[in-house]
Image (cartoon, rainbow, N blue to C red; front, top):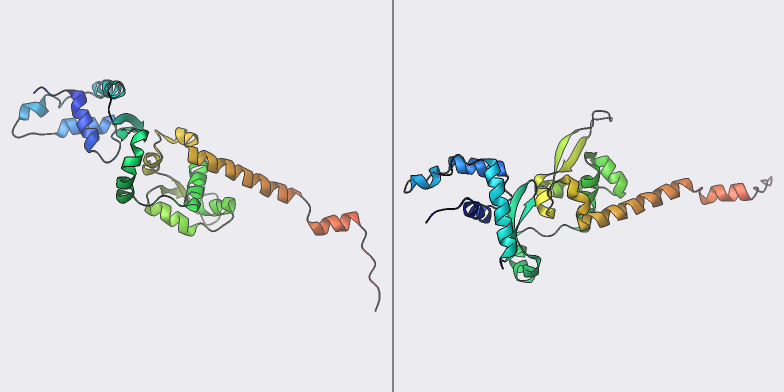
Length: 225
C-alpha cells in the first residue's frame, strides 16, 4: 500500500490529544522510524511545511465533501480533528467522564476579564469584579487556562500579571487571541462587564443622598441646650 501524505497527517491528528502545528508535524516526519519498513518513513523524512499545508487543505476538503462525523479545524495555532456539533448528544457522556467539570460562573467571568484585558494584575481583576478572586485565580492556574506572564514594574510591589494560555485557546476552540471576541460566552461576559463598569461610573458621578439633602434644603440651626 502506498501511503499518502494527507492520510499520514490524518492519522497523526486522530491520535494527537491537542492541536498540532505544521512545524510539529514536520518534526514528526523527520524523526519517525520504522525498523520493519525503513523506506516508508524515509520517503517522507524531508517533507516541507508547504507540502504539509497543501495536504491539510486537501484533507479539509475531503472531510467537507464526504459524509464524515468529524472535520478539520485550525485551533490555537495548530490543526485538530473535531466532531460535528450534531453528534454532541452521543458524545457528551464520554466527554463529561474524560474532562474536568465545566467552568463555574465566577471562573468564567474572571477568565473573560483576563482574556480581554491581559496582561492584568490580581488587584485589577478584583477591582473590576468587585469581589476577591484568589480562589478563582488558583483554579484557573490549576486548569492551565491562565499563567503568570510577568510583573507590573510600574506598580507598587510589582504585582504579578496574568494572561491566557494555549490551553485556553484549545478550550474555547479559538485560532488565536484575535478570535477571543468571537467566543459567544466571552462576548456575553464582556457585555456584562461593560454594564457593571458603567453602573459603577454612574454611581461615582451621582452625589450621595446626604449631599443632595444638604444642597437642596438648608440645615436647621442647632438649638442650644
